[in-house]
Amino acid sequence: MKRVYLHPLPLRIWHWLNALIVIFLLATGIQFRMPGIAALWSHNPLLAWHKWAGLAMTASWIFWVIYGLATRHFVRHYTFRRRDFERMVEQARFYLFLIFRGEKNPFHPSPEEKLNALQKLAYGSVMGIVTPVMVATGLIYTSGFRIGGTLLPFDTIKTIDALHVAGFYLFALFLMVHVYMATLSPTLFTHIKGMIVGYEEHPEEEPGEAVPEAAATSEAKNTNQ
Ligand code: HEM
Image (cartoon, rainbow, N blue to C red; front, side, top):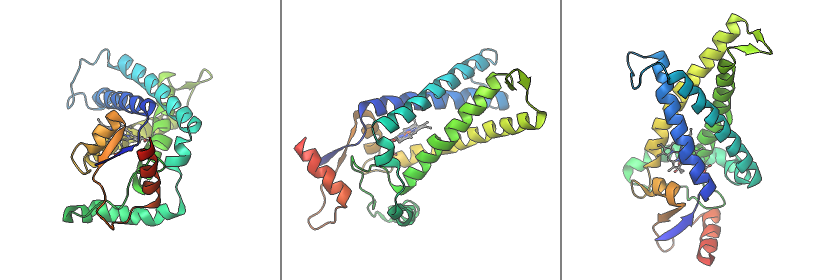
């Protein structure tokens, strides 16, 4: 087995705190819309809890942006390169068909490039579009739909409300797909354990098996660590 170090400690702490915040926001948010369906807690304190969790999400998002820029995390792992367009099709083919035939994942994560093309797209969209939209619309809710003391027009309020609810559905969808995908690894818990301890354990390549350039560099680095 070889160890590939993928997730630095600050990112792991951020990831699990952020996951808790998102799950809590979904669980409290669903009760505003469907109190009869999901009655987890009494309705009264929910709005205050939801607001505090929303502020925590704002702080979490600001941390993610600063960390991503300061450590070059975005440049290394989120830059969408030309070859990612071709790899996207290959990766989708793997997840939709080849995995069920027992074939190996075409992507090998490395400390230089740990996200495959579809992960870049999914995580980039959730963190770069859906989260800021949820934060911005949530803050407008918190202000009582007033900007500079003036109540927003009714149509604008309806649009903000629709965006916030659409974001809820996107987060819920992302969470289900993300947790399922997180279990698609050499063993059920390889990726999840990796997000806890920082490194993943992968079987050594068979003799003669091609190792992509980025993975090869990381292996060389890992063995030197
Ligand atoms: C309990 C639920 C969750 C589990 C088990 C989980 C698991 C994982 C794992 C194993 C990874 C490593 C990369 C991979 O294999 O995909 C990962 C990465 C990631 N997860 Fe989650 N996750 C959960 C919830 C969330 C939530 C709620 C969000 C945010 C909306 C989130 C956002 C991310 C992001 C952005 C990354 C990429 C981190 C990076 O830049 O390296 N996850 N997650």
